[in-house]
Length: 233
Image (tube, rainbow, N blue to C red; front, side):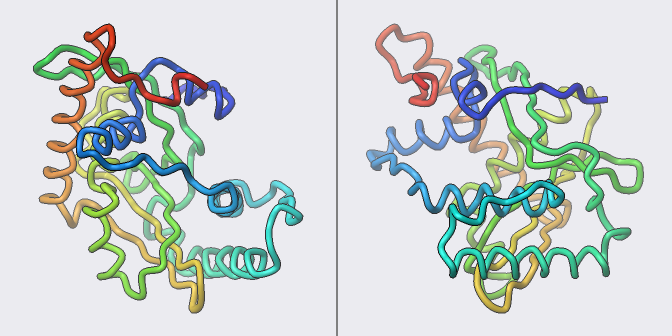
């Protein structure tokens, strides 16, 4: 069983462990890309979306959103509820835990590195635990949604989170990751991607995060090397 770890968002982000988002920052810096902060309104939209799906009983402060955002978020929640009415028993959509924090050590050829992951949810289906990750999307179809996985490194995130859960449970989990993508505009389609159907993508994602972790180990060994900006929080 997974033990709950209660940390605020600031406490979690500042933990001196490597998260998947830190690997994104390292990748951007090494490629010479600017690390762009998330706009506050975009971050709040995502936070409320997660709350409506993961904690629907919790009251929402709608004053934090524009009228259009309120309209879209409420329709997204209704689309999800309709999806559940049809498919709740056909996948890991009854979550056993949400906002699950995992602290673990991941080995690399360059040495072991302390890591962390914050899973949107863990669900069980056919006696197997599954990583559940929620995304908002503008994709007009399921195929278009899947095409963006490499662009946004969802494949790397899937492998990183899955291996973290496997380590914590001491259990091989195949490719047990479900992405739930919800259109943030009409017609508010729900896209579900079972990564067991994309084994090659999982292999590529695993290679991505392992290569970056090796680079992170070397940076952390360097007294003047890169450190995740979140650690300064």
